[in-house]
Image (cartoon, rainbow, N blue to C red; front, side, top):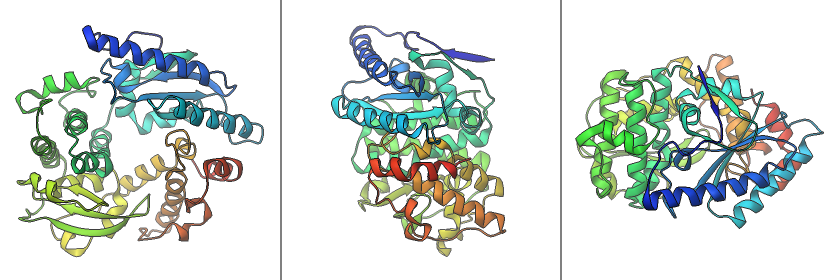
Length: 398
């Protein structure tokens, strides 16, 4: 079974102000898609997530687009059109600040990506809206519990912490609902995550965070979900009574981050943490994150963390992370998915370093971006990257 992404109305038919907001966002998205589809590389353009689901909220929602490209874009005949398309995206984002993440996939990359991200792509299969170009078929792929757990953990290392630090209850509630929905898939409660957050809140029931809830209440609901998921998928950990902290050079960004563990029964303790590089976890949330999202963090944990009962993830966890980090979408992250250079090229280089270590039956330990070479340095402009480094980065993808 598969669904065609076609020119269809938003998944959630709404009324009143919400309908007007959705219509306005879709009109802007169609204008952006028309401009981008003029590139000879672009096969299809579709809009996804909140706008496709009919849940756009002005002025908070971004217009998140996906471009399907005709060619693999790394050959000498394609780099010119790709560079031109990248510059058009950057100009478009300056003219329309509501334009958010623009993902780019080639037709050759899609089959492996759909296998890597079935939980994520189930949203697009059911709700994305074609804005320009040819329809795209997305197969319905069974979502393994491990992949749904990965999608739960995906929000932990930046999105959740940023929302807590800025006391952004609106964003935090969005993340909590998406995370709960993916946790439900991992636990076998339903086959696919809910498309809309309204549906997720209804399925969650009385425990779901409400729109007027304070940050502390949403944090508690979110980390309670982590505790339940952890209890069904991983062995128990020792409890902690007070926050614990450790600084690590976190792969694959290789930025120095402060890992902060807060007690599972006192998640509100996270609200007292104000370190600019902090990532907030309960022990159970961190254990899930290491097992399903970033196993390379395990060897960087200090002994007093390990002593809580953390176990080394299986080799399959490392391979899954490497495969995600070597997808061509990351080579095209600069200027497309992120306004600046970002960490896409560094992620690819780190993944190849990690793969080489595992091939020698050893686990990669701490390393700096400088040690990984010029492609990982992050000192390039977007223009310089596409002119002189993109082909190398893409050649390292799998």
